[in-house]
Structures are given as structure tokens and as C-alpha cells.
Length: 97
Image (tube, rainbow, N blue to C red; front, side, top):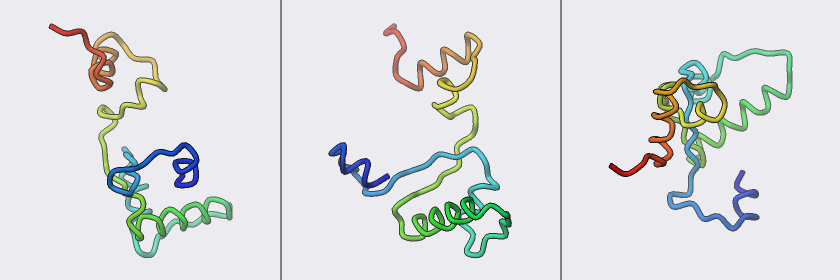
């Protein structure tokens, strides 16, 4: 991620990336010193350990965000009118009063 940001010449204000996650189990696995996560897929294990390492070094911060507050939901799910209006508000695209 840092190489991509460097290539795009994007400068971060606080020098860490914040990932919003609505799954408390995933956050626990990443933040736990010794994760109890077991899998036969080596690729998943490597990614899990890398993410733990980056969180421990302070390069990535993971915070819990309820599903209703996820901005990405507006791009990935069908929303009814009221949820769509909330999504537009999250993006700052509401009409002035």
C-alpha cells in the first residue's frame, strides 16, 4: 500500500493507514499477540501475519465501525431511499437547505 501511495505521490498526514472494519472477530485476530486462527491455506496465514506486523509497528490502525456507518456499503449494496440519502450525506453530497 505504501508503495502505491508513493507512486501516486500521495502524502499521509499521520503516516498510518486506518482500516474501518465491522467485524469484531477479525479485529481481535489482527490485534491478538498470538492469534488462534488456523487454516490450511498458507496464503491466508501469511497475509494475517503481515497485517499483525503492520498493526504492531503502527503503520496500520484498525478501528471498529458499525455496518450502518460504512461508506463503502453505498457502493456495494442496493440501498432503499432513506439509506441512499444517508449515503449521500456521508459523502457530503446533500443539497444545501
